Image 1: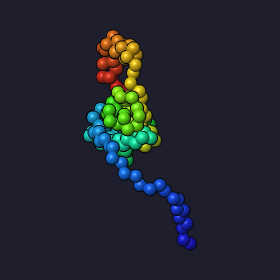
Image 2: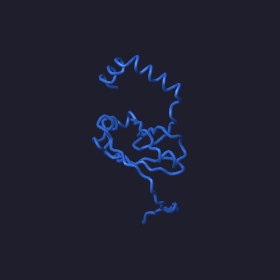
Image 3: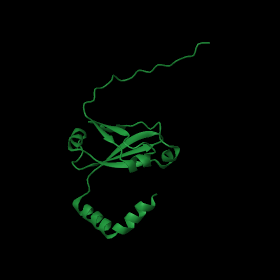
Image 4: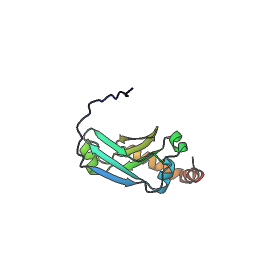
Length: 133
């Protein structure tokens, strides 16, 4: 008996000119369960941002946590997708796949409140960071 293979039509390949490569810093790589310096490719299209990273080596513990990483969006990338300058990218892994969300920059009044809270509780936040998750 010959196995039946179903073939579905696909879209034509697209050339992508706007790609940014970011290497994961040590603490981010550890959270993702990946080696330090693991590359992440960020592709900017008018429809949004996509990420590619090799999550094959990701630890099962990291897969359960679904880690995330915040990156300041480059100005040119923001222009391509129509986002505000100063927007933030949230790159995270969920069920072994990378996802990207775009967050607008904080309003100045909210940024002042956040900075005040961070400054007021600096020692507590440093202790929490030292203790880990």
